[in-house]
Image 1 (cartoon, rainbow, N blue to C red):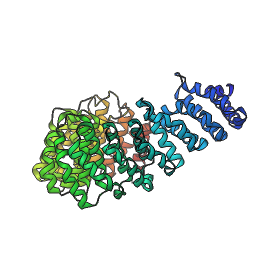
Image 2: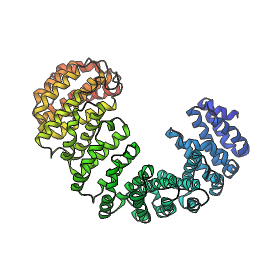
Image 3: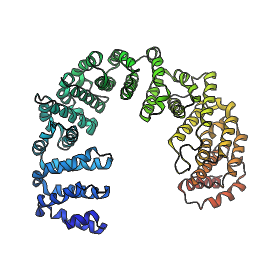
Image 4: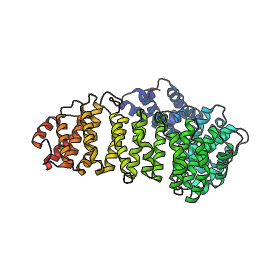
Length: 561
C-alpha cells in the first residue's frame, strides 16, 4: 500500500523507485493483495486524471509479471476498467483499451469469455454497451478468428434478444476499432450478423443495420462481394418495412455499401433509394436529416450518377429543404450540409450551386451567412471560378463584401488571444473568392481596400487582426491586377499601425507588410526601407512567437535585397 501511495502521490524519483519495486516483486506479492489495494483506489470518486493514469500504468506493468495468476481477478478488474472505454476523455479510453488488451493476453480467451459471458444478456443497457466494447478489444488483442465461433453462437442466440443485440454490437465495435484490418474476416462477420436484419426485435434490426454501415465503412473501397447476401434485405427493409429510427439505420447502411459497388450497380441502387431520400428531406427528426444528407453525399460521389439527374431530381428539393437558416444554428447539421453541397458541386459544377446560394450572403442570420461562405470557399477551392458568368461574379463579390462588413464587431471574443473559428471562415472565404477570380477582381479592389482600412481602425483587436490577415491573402491578386499604387498606400497605412499593443494583431500587420514586400519588391516599397527598418528594430525584442516569426522574416528579406 505504501508503494502504491508513493506512486499515486509521491515525487517523480519516489514514484520511479516504487514502480520498479512493485513490478519486480509482483509475483511474490501475489495477485490478491495487489488488486485488493489497487482496485479500490481506482474506484475513488476523488481520483484525478494524473493519479488514474499512474494507477493504470501500475496495473499494466504487473499484468505482464503476473500472467496467468491474474485469472481469478479478471471480473473485478473488468468491472473497474470497462467504464473507461466509454469515458469522454480520449486518453482514458486508450488506457482502458490497453489494460483490457494486456489482461486478455495474460488471462487467455477462455477466461475472458467465461468472465464476460453473463454480462452479454444483462438487462442493463450500460453493462451490455461496455461489455461489447471490451469484447472488441479482446478480439483486436487475440485475433478476430479466435472469437468468430463465439460471436456466431451469440448472434444467433434464440434465448434472449439482448444477447443477439450485444453480439452484433461487438461486431460493430470490432469494425470501428480495427478499421481496414477487418477485410480478411469481412465475409464471415457479415454472415454472422446478417440474420439480425430480419429479427423480430426492432432494436436488433437497428443495431444490425448500423453494424453493416460500420463494416462497409471500415472495408471501403473493397469488399462489396461480402455484402451480396445482405443487399436485398437492406433495400427491402428501407423500401417497404421501416420508418423512423429503423429506416435511418437502414439508409445509413445503404449509404456506406453503395460506394463499394461498381459504377452501373451504384447508379441503379442510387435511383432506387433516391425517392425515399427525397421523401425523408421533409422529416422533422434531426438525426434522420443528417443521415439523409450523408447518404446523398455518398450516392452522388459514385461515378455512375449522372449530373443531369442530380440537377433535375435532387438539387431543387435539396436546396428547398436544407438551405434554410435553422441548419446554420446546429454545428453538426451545418457541417453535413456544407459537405454534401461540396460533393454536389463536384458533380454539377460551380455555377449551378453558387447561383442558388450566392444571394444568401446578404441574409440577416450571421450563422447562415457563415454556412454560405464556408460552402463557397470549399467549392471554389476544389473547382475554381472559370465557369462563373459576369452577373454571377458581380453578385458574388457584392455578397462577399456585405458578409465581411456585417460580421459582429467582437467576432466572438474581446481579445485577440485566438481568432474565433467564425472570423476564420469569413477570412478564408474572402481570400479564396478573390484568388479564384484573379484579375476579374480589378473593379472591386478599391472597395475591398476601403473596407480593410476601415476595419484596421476598429477598436476590437480580432477585427484589426482579420483585416491585416486579409491583405496577406489578396496581395498576389492586387499585383496581378496592376494595383501597385494601392498596395503602396496600404503599406503606408500598415506602417502607421506598427505601434499595435496586441501581439497577435501586430504579428498579422507584420505578415501583411511582408506579403506586400514580396509582391511589389523592396525598391518600390512605401514607406521606403530606410524608414521601415528603424521601426522594426524595437519590435525584434517582442517575445511573442507570431511577432518574432514575421518580423525576422521581414528583416531577413530587407537584408537580402
